[in-house]
Length: 252
Image (tube, rainbow, N blue to C red):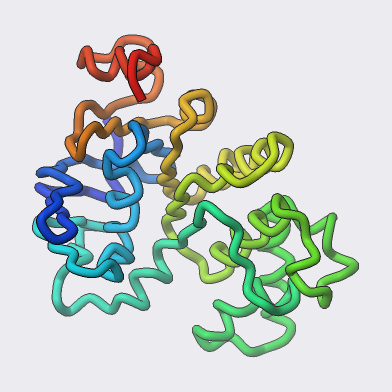
């Protein structure tokens, strides 16, 4: 058994008349890597973005059910969405550094949240770049524009930027899909290290990646939760024949 950090309860999400998630109930363990897998269009990213309410930015979205983070429903009326998103860092598919220096990209979040002391910012920037595996590559050019970094370096910079606001959870939406194999491996290595201190939820369409990284797996198909459980069991002895068929490449 594990301690759930996030508990999704009877979650339904629709865009207009098109229902994308259907009555999803699933627990996500604390300080582990959970992979959300399934074919394109099955609701993986929708489930991920429900956890920090980014899903509400879509037009015509309808939501029912609960997403509990540390026992608190993120959809409660009194929730401060800014605080929620500070707790839940997001790494997108495509690197999206801010149009500023490497240093300022990492310092941006802490400054927004009230940290302006230069010594504290310097320490935070270095710590986060270290945690993202980027410090040694950029420590002598922190004032350079982030746009000069390679795509793989930019994605690690985005990881450092997410870490800078001290989240509890990292939400990763196919974070290596736009990267070359070497950069992808670097991101994967950093996520494994970070999982000791963070709850990590990542969406991937690459089953090999899910096998490498995941402690826990959630398999979605056509908006429904088909199976969840420890990664080793789901990949070696799935309970549901649809899970077995997907893992074996029969569809998807």
